[in-house]
Image (cartoon, rainbow, N blue to C red; front, top):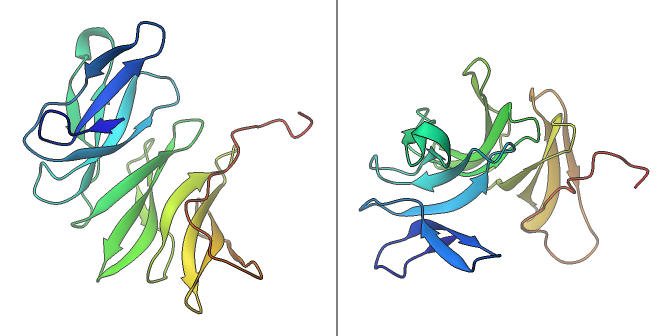
Length: 178
C-alpha cells in the first residue's frame, strides 16, 4: 500500500498475521501504485524520483532485498503498472504527445510498444492467459471498456447503455470451469 504517514508517499507492506507494518521504499520522491510481481519476489511501483513518473521495481527478499531499479525509460511518463500472470509483460499508462495510451514492456526482450491511440486510456489489466489487456477509455464523452492484444494487432471497444466504465480488472481465474 501507499501511505504518507511519515510526510511523503512511500510503499509499505502490512502483514495480516502479525499486524506489522513494514516500510519498503525510502526516497524523497513520491512512490505510489504498487503491484506485486507474480512470483512474490518484489513489487513494481510508480515514482517520480528520476524527475518524471516512471515504473520501478523493488526486491523484497534474498540478497537483493530493498534494491530498487528503474524499468521504464521510454518517454517522460509511465505509470500504473500491471503485470501479466506469467510475469513476461508489464502494461502501463504511457503519455505521448499529451495523450495517455496503453503501452507494454516485454521483459524477455526489453521491447517497449505503445498499443493504443486514444486520448485518455487508463487502468490496464491482463487477461489470465496474458494475450489481451483490458482498459478504460473514452468514446463520445463516456467511459467505455476496451481491449487490445499484447502485440497490438487486435482492438475492441465494448460499450454499455448507461453509465461510465472506470478501473476495469480482469478476473485472475485461468480455468473457466471453476
